[in-house]
Length: 137
Image (cartoon, rainbow, N blue to C red; front, side):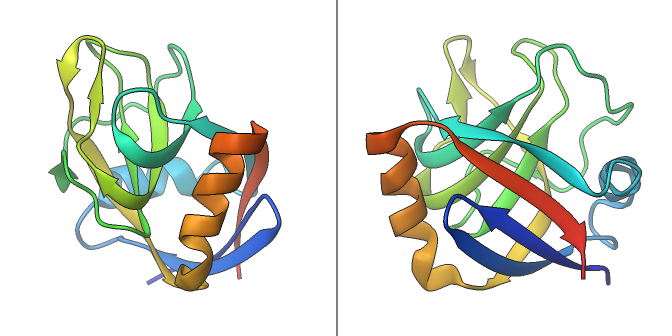
């Protein structure tokens, strides 16, 4: 299991890649590490923040996919009927787009700093985009 440090806005979280459940997604993401981007609040899905990735192709299909990630779960939507994206759930999420229900690959689970998830989500909602970074610990 690969341990990660995820920094988002003013907060730092510990986590791990879900190598056993989503090996292709984890391998594709690992090639990008360290990874930096911007998170914005979701439009349709509830209590989540996302990294819009346009037509970026990770070269993976569905594995360990869900439409209802739990708080602290990070999913990759590999593209298709909506744009490619990475979503971090900080509360209740029903993963959707203007095209309807979606499913994304649960490939990272945050394991520490979870008490700050709601504060992160609210800061993105009320203050706007925040930096996010992922690196191996």
